[in-house]
Image 1 (cartoon, helix red, strand yellow):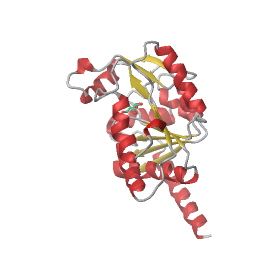
Image 2 (cartoon, protein in one colour):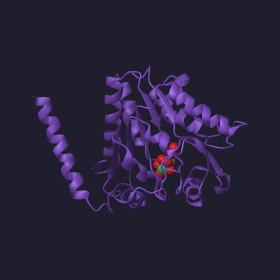
Image 3 (cartoon, helix red, strand yellow):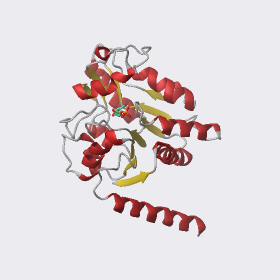
Image 4 (cartoon, helix red, strand yellow):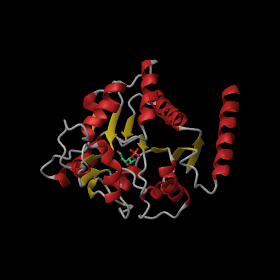
Length: 263
Ligand code: F6R
């Protein structure tokens, strides 16, 4: 796992956006996995600036990680709408290439199977952008999610509902169920980039990077991924035992990249 520790949220967003932009540069028809929530917002802002500066995203497709069950697509907190407002519209993606699981489907299991089929038909996800819950969830794969899980219906923990209550007028309005890509679905992405900032994420980051791979801390499954990057600010890195080692390896990587550019 590549761990990159940066000064603040701005640098974290710029780093993640840089990785995404260079992938789109190389593969103009790239398939992006996109997250909602606060963590990736700075990444989307910087990416928006790169699009304004000429990055061509006209052939890029996107798949959201998850969606609440029972919120109509025009509800301000449905991930259909959140993705439209924070990703599709500001980046100028083609809406017909942006996918979100259908949390209003009568047959939710069929909607989950259909989502997996749509990802496969697009050729799989090239780069999956992730945030992390304070309880270690990625997507909405709550603690004890199967490490082999695919897109399915999950029940949100009380902790996640409380964390997400800030987006709703009344905490009772936070849905109790969601559809989420599974941990194995996320592992299938060619590359993953997880962004986390702030002290509230420090414990989860230490557990998923340095703890055992275990369903109790679902993000730890990324240790099984060959191209997983975790990008954190100093606050979210606070509980990492080997922080100095990650800073050293990152400085070596930068040195090596500079040398390669001047060769
Ligand atoms: C969102 C998602 C979640 C969030 C996580 C962190 O699509 O899949 O895993 O990334 O709950 O949320 P924030 O970034 O709001 O702290």
